[in-house]
Amino acid sequence: MLKELLLYMHIFAGFSSLVAALIAAFNKIFDLTHSWHVYSGRVFFAGMIIIFLTAVPIALMTGDFFLLLVAIFSVYLALSGWSYARNRQGTPAFLDWLRSFGMAAASVVMALYGAGLLISGDTNGVTMLVFSSIGGSLSISDLKIQYAGGVTGKERVIRHLTMMLAGLIATVTAFLVVNFTFDPVFVLWLAPTVLITPVIVIWSIKIEKDAVPRGMPQDNA
Image 1 (tube, helix red, strand yellow):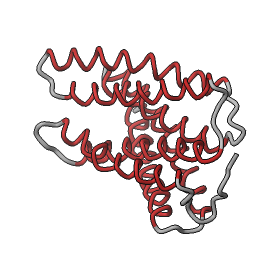
Image 2: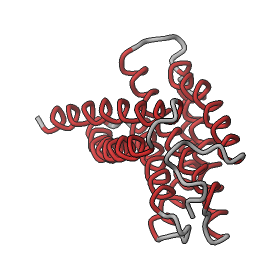
Image 3: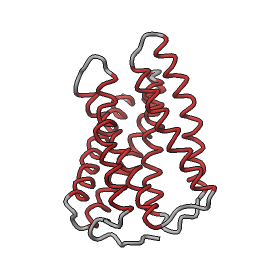
């Protein structure tokens, strides 16, 4: 009974996060009022936290270590995006250090687990190795920023959008994997990463050139 309840909560939170993330993303594309981005971002963040809080016990009940690692990776992205949105002064807080060091350690575990899957013939090892490299590189980048005293202005906005769009990748990936089948399975797991990553790069370049979305101050420091 408990597992079924957690699963329903997990699915509802996942659907809510996906819808909210798409609203926030298309809000930027169509340059709409920034308040829509803010409110949908809050829904997305809340949904991602619920996804994590339900995924952990489900993973422990079912022995699904893959799900557990993906949940850690996803909540790291959400926490990072939320932190960069809220912390306009840039001074690192305890939670910032905790999430960055936690993801750095988790990326090592993910790499070892992914290698083990590949050795056993499971192509999902490719997925885990890619997620490990992304999580590891982002967490190391976070730690460099934190050791330097934080980030403000355009760089803070870029980090916020990068992390939130990476979180969107996680929600879209979950939707595809649950609702569709494809062989090899890692193609479904990695397709959103391949498709959405260029969007992250394009938006980062636009913001670096001062082309920030309407309703967002030029300098958010």
